[in-house]
Length: 197
Image (cartoon, rainbow, N blue to C red; front, side, top):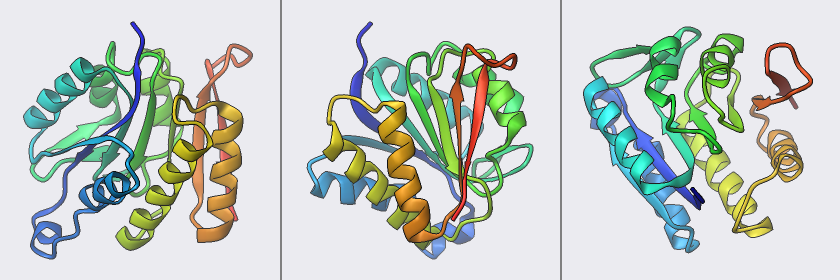
């Protein structure tokens, strides 16, 4: 099945973030719509809602999934639930094949995440910050990233343009990024590219 080169954003925050109106994913979606880049945006509070919206993503056949949430080195979290990397991999199994995953969450980009997702799916790559990131920096970084990527080629993202664009933005915004990509030449089935300023 041919996928659509469009962006699907799922966001979940803590109650305090909601009160302070720190809706990173929603702001990114609005900026991209202003730039005429089609997105779908959903806000969830529970794992059950997250799984339901992942089903909507699957049916949409959008090619790019962006998850904006809190996290740590063992998993991500919705407002009310914790989702381990293992659970996340199982939720995304048969959903992100031949697609790209972008995660905007503190401290989640590590080898455990790559193992749990890239070894059981045919996802092309996972990209996200390798350390804690402020929400204002995240909004600016991701908006610039998607704007540039769709300007380079609105019909697809390839490894060369992805890495080149990420390097420019890491240098500009001083945000360390990790990029995990599938590789037939690796015994793990994937390679890690650590982009630091």
